[in-house]
Length: 254
Image 1 (cartoon, helix red, strand yellow):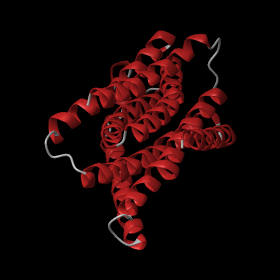
Image 2 (tube, rainbow, N blue to C red):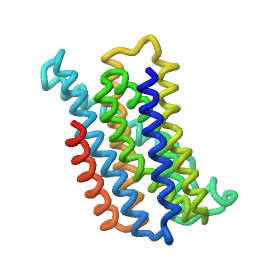
Image 3 (cartoon, rainbow, N blue to C red):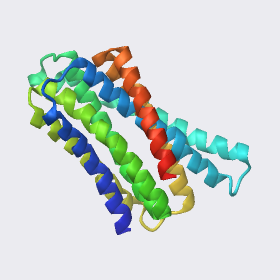
Image 4 (cartoon, rainbow, N blue to C red):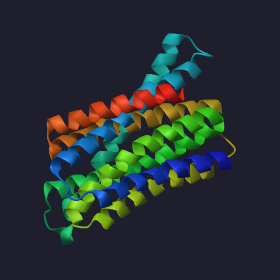
């Protein structure tokens, strides 16, 4: 139990580490903003589709046919994507939260939406890391490292636009650290809610569901935000780099 919680804390702190990168950037440009957000989207999507879902499908195949196992995992993933899209629609209008309700710049809008979205999805990520660590320490460690790897560029994705919008690099780094705290909070909430009733079905279902949330946030928030901020080419370059780095990481940690 303590080991699984430690993994979620480690993964969450990586977001703050990524946020500290903004302190070393002499000048924040739109292109670097787009690349960092595209990179985070590529890493998250790759983790969800190339590591988490295959793991769930393999587990399901132990007690149901391959076709049904794939349908079960895919269905839970789709539910997670729908949940992520619904969550994004429920987010408050950033125009009402910055500068006393005055209209803010496009970068400020993107910064606030990304920060809230990442904090929201860090909660189930913390749950995922805890459940993965409790199920299998080796799988939990691999998952925590994968989450930590993509949390670093996510920290950049939060801190860079926030620093630009708030005219303070320290405030941008602070927002990244706060969003990372949601990771261990998710683990603690999981213990409070599921303690005593955890089983293999809940663990595998949660992994597939959170994979959907991560996919939805990547495709619905991070990648479009990167394109809006830095241009289509910058976001796609970052996305490709994120996919490549994470595929290599998954292969090494396998």
